[in-house]
Length: 157
Image (cartoon, rainbow, N blue to C red; front, side):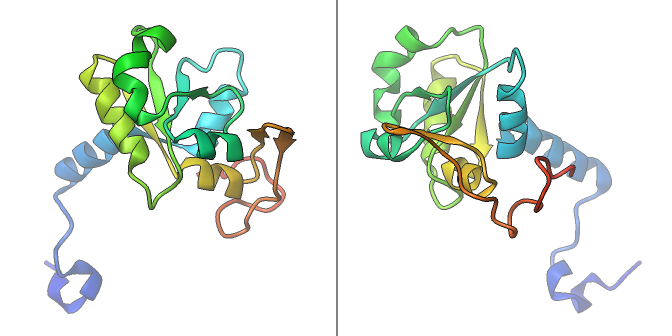
């Protein structure tokens, strides 16, 4: 048996494989990354509705094309008018430093919707070079080489 305590990264030893598999499977059940969301949206039938849970200022600043604008505070009163309970929902907000998408996912799941969160939010959507919709049209930035492969539309991870 290795001496895990010798490594700062392993002061707390890794979980047994079965527990680790359950944890990582659960994460994938609750989250989707921006690259997978984009690939799905580019298909004929993504199989979900994408919800931008930010307020009006964020939505106007730029949002994922095809997303529905449903601020978290409005979910209790507007979700039933905008969303089909039979269609899964993926929420997003600003980015990794914001838990708005998590709060929106919680509110939707409490109303009976099947929901996932798009990790990375609009920040990583933009950083990966994907198009955003604005009041003046669409915009696209070059991918950030720290978050996306240069010259490739997919990370292949």
